[in-house]
Image 1 (tube, helix red, strand yellow):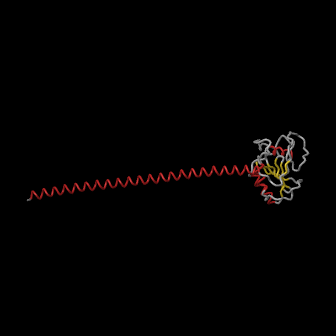
Image 2 (cartoon, rainbow, N blue to C red):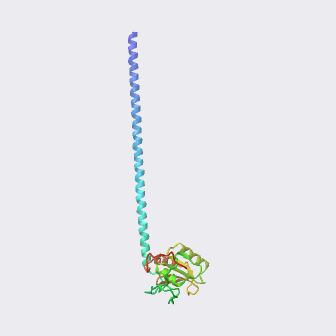
Image 3 (tube, rainbow, N blue to C red):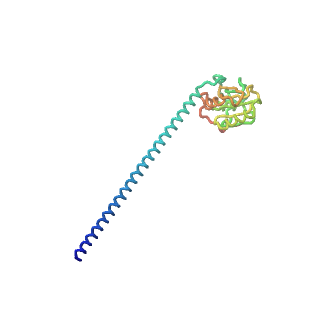
Length: 225
């Protein structure tokens, strides 16, 4: 009886230990399965996030290209569009001379000129400049803004700010001109009454280094007053 009881107790102990082992293996398997699910989920999230970043980058790149293309088209359209009031003077001389030149238009927009240009990388002069040097700057593709005593302080500030922000442009007072404000490019001229005239921006867009430029890419620095 005692022997049978001991044997039964041993078998019961073995069964319990076996069951405990099975439970541990099941628990381990369950934990591994949960870990694998987490890994798969994380990989999916990372893949989706990476895909979203790629798509976003492609979309941004596409938008930038389209935006640049549109700006290029807009600039080309502006360069070809007519501006009401613009006067042109045809072919003009380009000989370098040392003497003063009697120009047929005021301010002059072309013709024979001094061999040295005016600095025109957004330069604003507070005194009148030499016609012969300014004309040379126009030959290089600059826009020359001039004004007389009718221009208001607001006009002068607005134009000065625009010129300072625009390479290949310059500005100076011109007391003898008839118009309040005159925009000058090579063989091209526009007179306006106010700096707020929308044609001012259009003139800059079309004629700063525009098609009228006689020497594209020529320097607008290292000149003289």
